[in-house]
Length: 261
Length: 230
Image 1 (cartoon, rainbow over the protein chains, first blue to last red):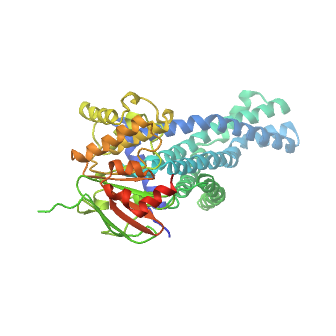
Image 2: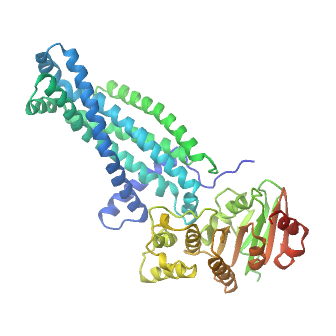
Image 3: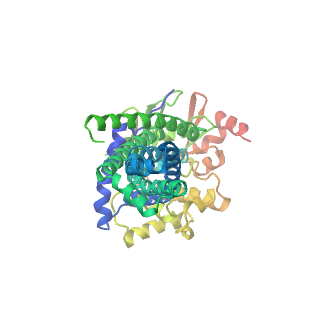
């Protein structure tokens, strides 16, 4: 015999929760009238940013190292690297390397964290308790974490641009003796504000899609039983990895179609 | 004019024979049964977490979904919200109704903490509490807000004898004084059920038996339940 939960968590209701909580939180936090949901949102944003900034910087630094090493090895000569490759390196990083690295981080840390948080709160009946006191768990549990993911992913991209630059410079300095100022000025010239905005937007859209997948799986099913958290988190990550590729492909096709890149 | 009962259940099916019963003002109903007999499932329906057919569960004459604010729930797991203190957890039902936590409301929260013997835990984070204390805080939270009917799943499980006696006394006095109109508790403890309940609903297999609290000792199904659980 199957039983149905009273509160439903469809994709549209989860998206609605993100919008409503996000739009209400900003003025209330700014005017010092924050509710219990607003305070949870701020706590999640700061927590997620603090918990991923270091990992993101390190990951993109290593991506920068590896990418620059590969490029220098194939450039033919130091002069060819400095004149032909370096002026385009920043643009290539921001368009291809950073979104990939940050999207992976968002999928792994964000989706795993969000799904397992919701699922474990269902097992411990915290979600039931929120419903019992009249709070919508989508507002209190899901939306703050989703908003944290959506705000943090673009912020991590900005951190990533500079961390990757540092990694690439280190390899370039060791391999071909490029000076720091010279490297930074060539790298920065190819990082246009338009490209940065496009990457930030793509990551915000990807993070929104990933958080909805995580929320959908977290709230799935009427009852939370033994082994529920692991099973549901694995399913969410598998779907998120696949969906992240599809979302990125669609966004790339869209930006190409409108000549935005 | 006759007032509607605090809780009325009509033909509710949780897997076996459809259940029908009422909780009258001042009554405590204990739902008794073995593991997996459907006690928690019944309570999940009565507390509005699982969908019930319209009209099958009424609280004070209104459909359950219209009266949820008056139903306080103690869950099988305490369900305390992580990252919040004991005080914040108990204050939650007041906060969600947009009330400012002024001096009067703070005193209401503290009163509930004292009633369940948790007055000294005000600023503790919930993860630091023992299982027994978590249960007491969960009961205090269920009594906050506009609660008139209490639904409690194993409210005295994991409690030390002194705390257990305190909670039993509290539950009985809450219905006797009219603070609560009625209570439904799920338990596996027949002695606890006989001490506090006016009626006992025993779930066994796909069938069920409803007896008055004082008649439980003579009922063959209750006797069989006691034999199985000793």
